Image (cartoon, rainbow, N blue to C red):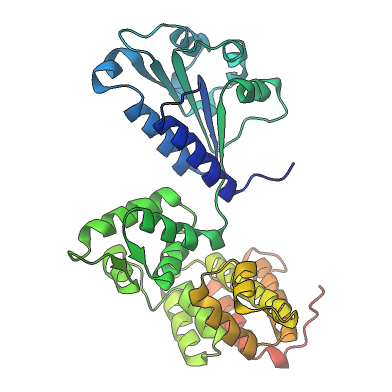
Length: 356
């Protein structure tokens, strides 16, 4: 079975949400996984939309996992009939802390059709090999909420912004993703604040908006460092590095090296695709990038040939290990960063075994 991905999560989320909006309800919903954003969104939609405001006081119950000493607390509530409503809703939050949650299986085998039981299982997934999980699949809906890959976040940001009736410049989306990482809940919170402070009648977000309202420098970030290195702009790259070193807590070495590794991995792929004489559209699709950035990869590939790119990728692996204490060297992250960038710009003078 293929591994469930962040994109699969988005598809499944959309399908469940569409059914809920059309009042197609299942008796059991298990919302599980590391990406809490979609778990929260679906549970909030159910809490706010299945019952009317007047029906909720008697027919909607929230149970927290830490309060469940006996599984009967959930099953007894689930077996009650609704009062003056077609349904009752029971939402179990933080269900991952319930040690014997599989004891719900007898109820799930024969659930009350007038009860909608929502189990929020954050940070973990229920073992798919168990009879308990298979019973859930037969009787209800399961959302496995998987985190996106880092390189998928800018596209996700652009899509979310568009859904809210706005636009965002591609480089602004990359800067925001670079700063906030794969924390979708935090990203949405920051974007929602930004929507409210944009000048009236302006719907397009740029890098300056990000800098002024979210506190991310449009000039000093890992995206700009990666671009400077790709462009062989030694002065610019060293200026950014100096800023990173002075503000080490805001710019962790592990994030910087991850961004550079992602960039040069794509440059290597670009070389391979170009050797196949593929067109720009095919290369853009294969790299999974916004068309806005294809020129950057073309420049980087012209500045670093395939052998140089391979040596840089090996160099990045080496410095990633050094930063984690392997092959111990007496150097802090600032020294490692300075040394790494210097070696990249002088990659031809370095004898490096790319196979190690």
